[in-house]
Length: 273
Ligand SMILES: [Zn+2]
Image (tube, rainbow, N blue to C red; front, side):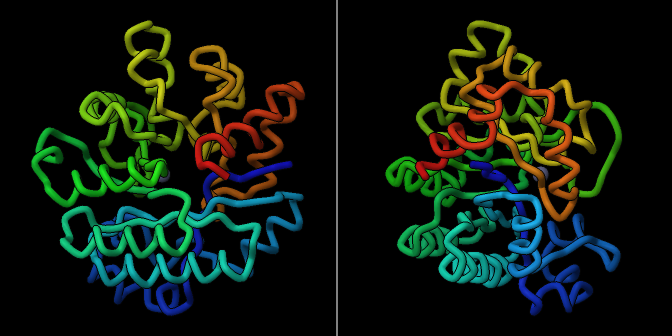
């Protein structure tokens, strides 16, 4: 069993009008341009078949426009309804009053988590009533929130952002009961699980390996397992940003127990699959 814990798809009505959506949505503008790799549902299914991936978790982005969030959420949910090997997540603009209603709709349609959210967490989030309500609904529904993690050092890339380990740690401190998945190994937050008090606070946090070949050497899989826990690291490609085959090839050195956990067991636990 292989689960790819983070992939992204967009409908043609968005991918055919890049310039239009760049003007409408700030996050879209920061991530996409005419040369960006974008795929639809059928292309994702094709890549899964070619790479013997059994299931893919499909996420959105941290949209800043409610209309775009709504279009992409519906597309992901419709795709998952037609293809039972796709696991849907939903994203939204955390500043839009309509987001609570959108989340409740997505949960009623079977969404398994929230994300990928791109944000720059600070104390002001805790005064944002929409954000607090999203956290409460997620807790009640027992669904995790997948959040992009930014490395505080290293090369710059489109959509890297500044949501570094300090911000992710504060987020968990202020919302200790919520379940989180931090993408890209939490921008390095996983390394601080060596500190006993940090490990204790981050007990409800999982890390995915999305875009690993682009960010880290392959040894990070075993290092992260040793630093954190074999129960908390999820294999993810971030396809179409990086090809699934390239990500899979970096995991060949892992033993079968490690593979069982990162490819299946941990995603099943994190997302209640
Ligand atoms: Zn990301």
